[in-house]
Amino acid sequence: MNRTLNRHGLAAGAALLLTATMAMALTPAEEGRRVYLRENCYGCHGGRAGGGMGPNLRGEADDVSEAVHQGEDEGMPAYPKMSSLDIQYLQAYFRSIRTSTEPTFTHWWEAVPTR
Ligand code: HEC
Image 1 (cartoon, protein in one colour):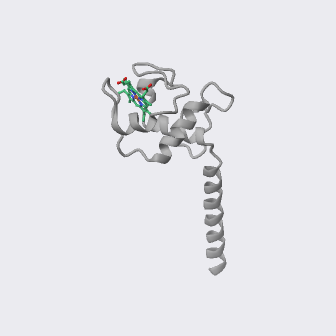
Image 2 (cartoon, helix red, strand yellow):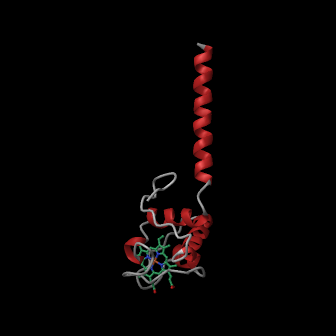
Image 3 (cartoon, protein in one colour):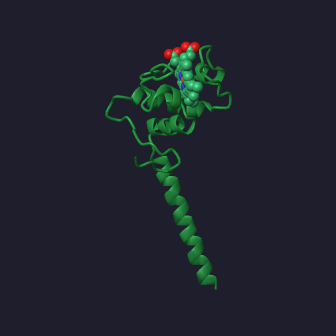
């Protein structure tokens, strides 16, 4: 009985460690891509932030915090609860677009997105 419990505890611990390690393996740009997809920014700014009904955000690094937290007059909604860490990730993502490190996956809910 004890041995079974121990084995299970060990397996659970190993799985947790693996998950944590994998989550930490994401780059800031990848985290930013996840935020971008999770918050549906692409609906207005395009799948790779090239613009749509909202402006092109490629290379955007200034004023992201202000635009996201407060919204803008011409149709940009406010996301007052967006964390400053998520804002930094978004900036890293916008800077990565059209570089070799641009993440292009489409599934934000995967711990380690694959496509
Ligand atoms: C409902 C459509 C819509 C959604 C959803 C949306 N935006 Fe916007 N966004 C806009 C529009 C339209 C503007 C231009 C507003 C203006 O010029 O007044 C804008 C402006 C911006 C700007 C400022 C760009 C600049 O050059 O001044 C940033 C940064 C931005 N959006 C980021 C985001 C992020 C990040 C998300 C997701 C969290 C997001 N937007 C979601 C429509 C949207």
